[in-house]
Length: 100
Image (cartoon, rainbow, N blue to C red; front, side, top):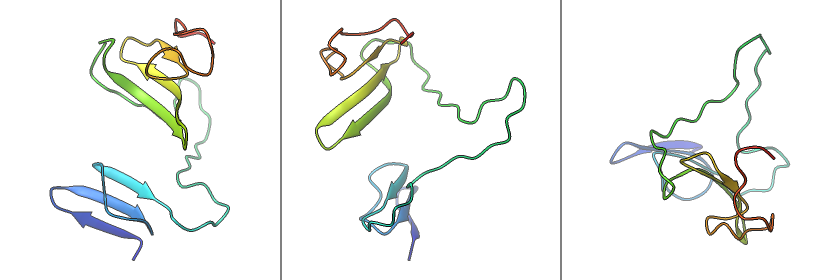
């Protein structure tokens, strides 16, 4: 089985454990393939991926990219970018103003 619907309304894809988020992809086997991929024809004024978290708060995160050591790229609700949630991450500069 490579997918299941769990109560309350969580969806799990892959061969790993249960869904720990509303939509969870968990790949436990080494298969030299990405767990998630988007391919899109590039048209003018179109975007391949939109993530909308309805907040502009500094204590909310829009995205938190992690490896086994923790956060490596963190985007706050106000758009500032860092290498960690604590703003002392691997970039060594605290938060950027949205431009790297």
